[in-house]
Length: 374
Image (cartoon, rainbow, N blue to C red; front, side, top):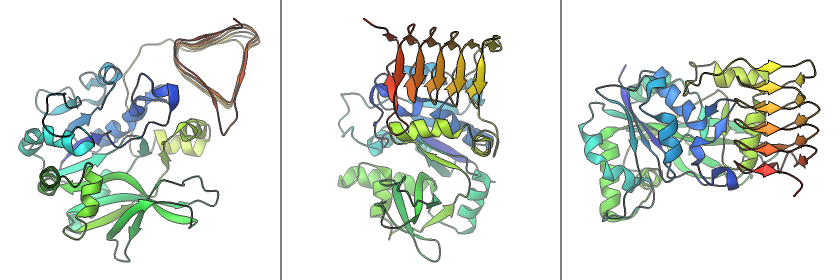
């Protein structure tokens, strides 16, 4: 099988997450009790034999460096190839810093000299554990210049409005990419992922810089759709398109459904992440837990229902956590209640405090806050 160069691009991800992304990029949002969103892109790549991955970080790089480090959890801490973390373009650079094409152009020498002849480009806010070997086989058999991945969506409730919609011919060729406005119940959602021949990628980047007619590689692909052979690959597995606070909350809550949890964590290889040595969670006699995902290192003395609890969280006696996400090392003290909420890292909800949002608009507490009566 042809080996590809993995590129994780983050420039096209909109920040609609409020205080959750005040100090972290979107792709570093915690997910599923112990992971970050970027873990799924990285893990899927290495599980399918990709040994060189470049992560274009964008701004707020500190949390990225802390989590990814040298890439050891993904076996990317290599003398040759491995993980490359690409910081944003500096002020002194002569080209525009807007979009991902300038970022790619700033590292074009690295891309040109890489041994891989195919690039897998991916945006990490969409969780889709695509069988990359099968997709590569399709890419090679059809002799395409570019193969873009999509998922057929049935959306009678309009949950996917403003997601990207791919128009596809009867032969499977990509016609165009636009926005889903909800005019059709069924549509093809573009997954912002695909294979592209390296020489085509380089041409698109250089031409876009020279002409100044595209800031994003996706934009360049669409503008050149009549010049190159661009087809599609259907992914039939589970997808989470995390694009705002509501979809982030829903994506975590969906993990409480066993079928979705199995699809996210078990299909097409395991999900790797930065390891932290934590003891087993302690459940006291007063603890009541129902349908929840609870990580290691927690102390549960109160009531937890339909919630995702990250590492090192304490839920004190007579406290209630329901339909909520509680992130690392936060504390819910005695007689406090948290309902339909997202509590960021190292937050303390003091005794007797009640916090509640709704399923459509969860209440959010910024990290390192102490919520009391004062």
